[in-house]
Every structure is written in C-alpha cells, then in structure tokens.
Image (cartoon, rainbow, N blue to C red; front, side):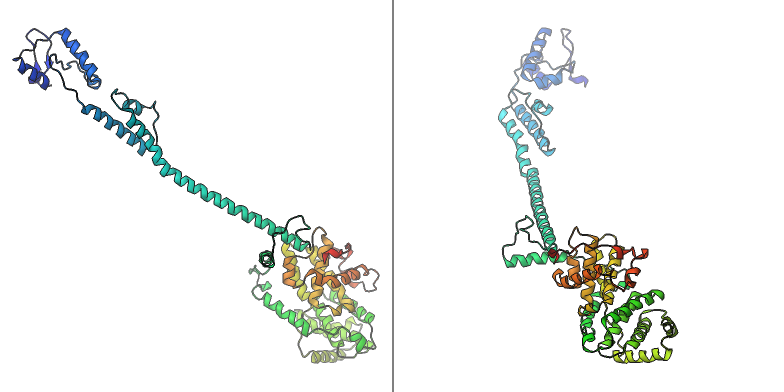
Length: 481
C-alpha cells in the first residue's frame, strides 16, 4: 500500500485507506473527516447489508473502507453479473453432460442472491435434458432397433432351419411332415420346389478333400459317370446258361467261382483281380460255347489275365498250372489266353461291383465321424456273395454295390433309415430302386449256411474281417422302400 493513500486523522483515530469516494467527500467538506469509532461500525454494518459480496471481501482486510456521509448508488450491474455467472456455470454443466441437482455447490452459488430470478434458472436446468434427448437417446434408439431387427432375422432363420431339418428327416424316413406331427408350410407346387432346392444342398460333398492324390477328387465325378455308361455297354448276358451253354450248369459255375476265391486267397490277390476274373468268365461264356472239361482252364486263364492287369507282381503261368494239380499244361493256358483276349478285343478295363462299391462306401462313411471298418467288411462280404450266384447277372454292378451298402447299414444299425441324401446323390439310386436287389441279397445271405459254396463265408468269418459273416440281419420292413 502506498503512503500517499494513507490518511491520518487529527483526533488520533487509526489511519484509513483513502478511496475515490472518500476523497470526494473530503473535498466537499474542505478536507474535514469527523469520524468516530461508533459511526464507523454502523457504516460498516450498513455496507454489509447493502452488498454482502463486497463486505465478504472486505472482512479479510483490517483497513476496511469507511464512508459516513456519502450515499452510494445501487449497482444494478451486479445482478446481471450474478446471472451471467449462473449461466456460465450451467453451460459448463451442459458441456460436461452432467446435470447438477439443486443441492449441488453450483446451484447454491447461483441462488445465493435474493434478487436473482428463479425462471431463468429453471430454464437453464431443463436445457441439458433437451440437448441429450436429441443426441444420446437417438443413438441408443437406433442401436436398439438394429438389435431388434437382427434378433427377428435370427429367429426366422432358426425356424426355417428347424423346418428344413425336420423335412430332411421325414424325407429320409419316407414320411410326410403331417405324419410326423408338424404342419407342412408348403402350400403350392412352387413353394415345394423351392423347399426341395433347400433340402438338396444338405448332402455331404465327398470330393471336397483334395489332399490325397489317390482319391482323384478333381476327376472322380467324371470317372464314375463314364463307368456308369460302360457298365451298360460291356455287361455280360444274363441268360447264356439257358440259350448257349448246354454242357455246363449254374452249379458248376458257382463251384468254379468258389474255388477261384480260394486261389485269390492263396496268392493274396487284390479284390479287384477276383471281380475282374469273374467278369471275364461271364463275358466269354456269353458268346462262346465251352465244354465242362475246359471250364476250370477258362477260370485260371481269366485269373492270369486279370492278375497281369491289376497286380504288381502277378503269378506266373506255371503257378496257375500247379494250382490245378497240373491238369492243364502251360501251352493250353497260353492258347486259352489268346482266345479270351481276342474275344475281348484287348479291352480289359471294365466296371465291376468293386469299382462302384469303393465309391459308395465313401459316401456311406461321410455320415460318420470315424470310418466304420465293420460297414466296409460287411458290404464287401455281401457283394462277393453275389459273385457265386448266377441269378445276380441280371443286376447292374452299380445296383449290386448300392444294395450291399444299403443292407450292410441296416444290419449294423436299425435306429435310422439306411439310405441318405448323400448316398442317393452319388449312387443315383433311390431306396425304392434297390428293393428287389436288397431282398434277393438278404435271401442269399440267410441261405449261405446251407450252400455248398462256403469259401466266401469262411473268408469273412476271420477275425481280420471282424467276423462279419456271423452277423445276423433282421427282417427288412416294407417302409424302408
């Protein structure tokens, strides 16, 4: 504090700070300032009542301004300043996105003045809610609508999937959706066609695995399509015993096939060699008359040709002569080989039951997590049983293979339908198409114990084939077809 602003009274009163108001009062009374301590306290209380904010600031000072005879003007601007302060505080509240309650500190500061109007404060308190209602709740409503839309779409998809899955099960079991207890959503043929399109893709793609080059996944569909055509053009006749062959019978043919099964086991030949051998025999007998004395010679010769085509290390001619107890010489075998090859036109590639069985078993195993060896062995056992029987020449090799898979699946598991959409797609046979073949195969299997040809039954009765020949098959109901 500067010394020139300090005034010392003549009556010994304590010094006081000279303000502009005090200086004007001094000039008006010719420099006289008759002040007493009592009047000083009264003036100080009056100032406190007039301006509490100004008094609060001056309470901390020991040299408070004392004005006795001067009437101060009311500062109307002070109320406006207070309102501006409250407005700024509310703006800060809005920016902070937090509305202060009436008991908060900022509200108390705003309403501390008696002359402050209440209406502006209320308007300012409602402002944050109006701003939030246009910003934050709008985003929340949009997000909630999106979630509700997604939930509706998801529930519709789930319902459609349930209906589709139920229809697939009904179709696979040969029942309608009304019989299953579910009302069918199909109302017209167009809707039924659309639903059928949705059902078909549920099959398993067995050619999706391209890791193993031996599976030929890229070319397998085209290969088997060509094989389906070849089995029609290169099949043997199914009535050569009645029309051409007069010296041999069906039983003789069955005995020859049963013996060749033992020979293939003796030399550990692959199954394709056995199937191809029987094909060559039937194909030759379809157009060439033969005597019963040369029937065994035809059998070993056809096995020699098939071994050269299928095996890596085929048995020699002398070994086949030895297996016949030297009934035929090497020259006779080579002569018969020339006759068979000339008749076949050296076209040794032909689709057999084993060719299609390998493909169909892969389709049947697609529904299992782990391949079932019992299913494979049982299907092969049923397919080889048909080699002995002459009556099965009237069935296509692909039909026999599909029927073997059908009966094998039913024998191992009666809880569900043995035929699936995957098998129907890859075999190109429906369950009703297999009825005659499956029933004939079932009768053949049940009568195998009474048959004199037991080589195949003994073969698949071994432990390495899981003794599938000893399995019993329940009766086939008509509802399966």
